[in-house]
Amino acid sequence: MTHKQERVLIVDDLPEVLDLLVRTIRQSNSFCSVEAARTGKEALTRMSMSPPNILLLDYHLPDKNGLEICESVKHVPFLSSMKIFVMSGPLPMELQTRLQQAGVKGFLTKPIRPALLTQMLGLPKSKKPVTA
Image (cartoon, rainbow, N blue to C red; front, side, top):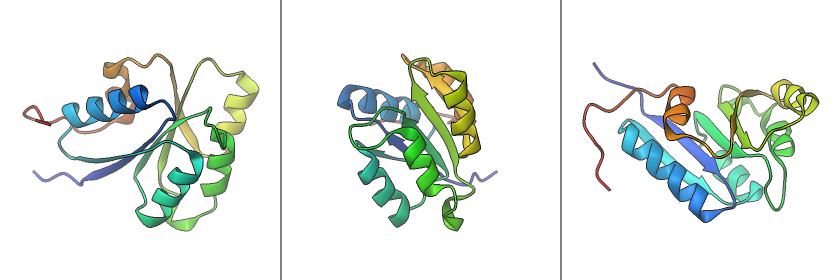
């Protein structure tokens, strides 16, 4: 059985969080290509050059917030099928609704539990551990 390789882009301005999320996904799934970005601008550039299937997006970035990024990509045809998940502390219900209208499929509350992350993203599991 062959698996389609998923492309995941993780966006967070904190290097230690970014590193943890990248390692978590790589260790739990060998069928993924994982990239990282630390700003909204860098994320938008990476998405335009190499569109991911999944975007794991910190809501609070130094240059843009998650809603601005989601609204930027909402009407871009080659990004319209991308699954977007927003990471943050608790967000007001009104903001969650606006994010969902902008294409967000789910929310992860920080600190993120690795098991919940891999389950929510719905990635096929590796049959053997991935080595760094």
